[in-house]
Length: 252
Image 1 (tube, helix red, strand yellow):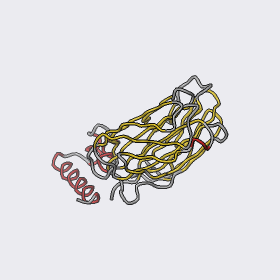
Image 2: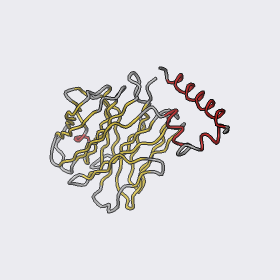
Image 3: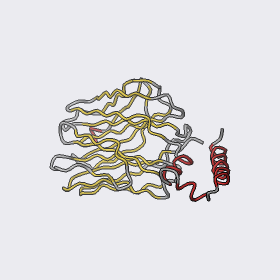
Image 4: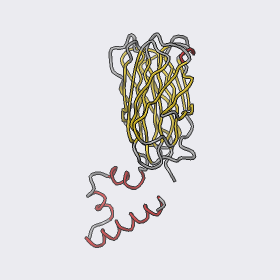
């Protein structure tokens, strides 16, 4: 059944129930747990399936086991974080031997933090290894985060990725999206002199926040789509950061 057909059917049921029980349409919605829950039923087609993370030090390759569910229209996003120059760019990412595709990268430059996102459409269901390989060995540690979604467009799973970097107490970027999408961000931080946790923006849901053995920290979050979505993280001490954010598109 098409999504539009489901939405129309849900609306018809609501009207019929309202007439049967002598309530108005607005009061019928109020009887749900919240208005947000009612909107989720009608428009939230992208769901988070599973999350996995890993970290290490002085390596050129990091393996993270991930259990992908059997839901329809799956998408995997792999986020990588490393402290160092371009030597620490990712050279390849695989899951169960399937190669992932590069989405976006940003770096503070020099010896700063590098953040990347890679994607894999229709990852195999089951528990398999995500293997990330860098161009050089990490002297300052690395972090990998893996997230799988269901309900994602298999032809055009992502919108346009946006990146930014800086040296401050706030990492932020604006993403063009729409109300039926889900925005995902990956933010890396040089944690050498930072004593506080990273705090996500008010409407974001943290998916992970992992500190490597040597300074590199990686975090990720999601937020419901809108015309413009601001993804941000804050902390209490100036430090180098790099953020990559991208909207995830729903299945038709």
